[in-house]
Image (cartoon, rainbow, N blue to C red; front, side, top):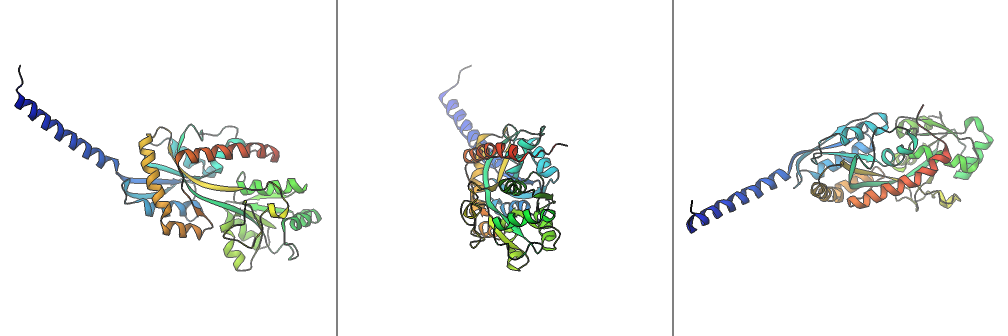
Length: 331
């Protein structure tokens, strides 16, 4: 069968048209109908609030037409991680999680039901924050610093305790390390969230609470508790009059945490990069920045590689610290 020059030109035209149609179809397919942002915590909490602010700003965009938040709470955030690692690797399901579930849990659970590195792919940092350590009415007004508090605990061993949002959380370990540092038997009381712990503290049920600094600000402003210290390398912008732990003589006591966004491990690189670009825009929006600031959080994005490096550094940091504390979550 012979093909004339005219046939060749016609075929070339059809091929070009099909190519253009294919490119247009791919571009349309690249924009998701809906993006699901999964958090391992209940509605109303800090993690949930971050997710909802990002969802509001990431859609509509070139990445997705709509976005919504799904709460998969339970097992200290583990259920959400397991849910996302098993989701289709198409970029339509993204996990938002604090560092603890990925960087600390491997050190406190002998059999963690997921691999933080092998099962998930990093997309972007979401927010960073410092912790605060506060005391309530059980502690005398003469206690104004962390050394004062530790001295008071030594003199009052039956009242030497502190609460945190969860056993095995960073705030729990900060309090435990303070006790180790001063050779004080500082008993830990685990709560399901920071606010329940604070309510017990201001009600005189426990002496102190270690938790995200933004959780304390309204109670401090109302005169219901006293913030003794912040955990960052420098004073928190949300509590500029509160000295850091390092300023109070605790060398090396610099601890912060972050929230990050992840997708299933086999998600294509080009999808991750497009999601990262959309996340950066959403996190830079003034409404997102200001909304997070109201919760004591600093909105901050990153590249996938930067988030991977940050998780690696924190995982290595907490390994020996967990051994020092001697805590295990396994019964």
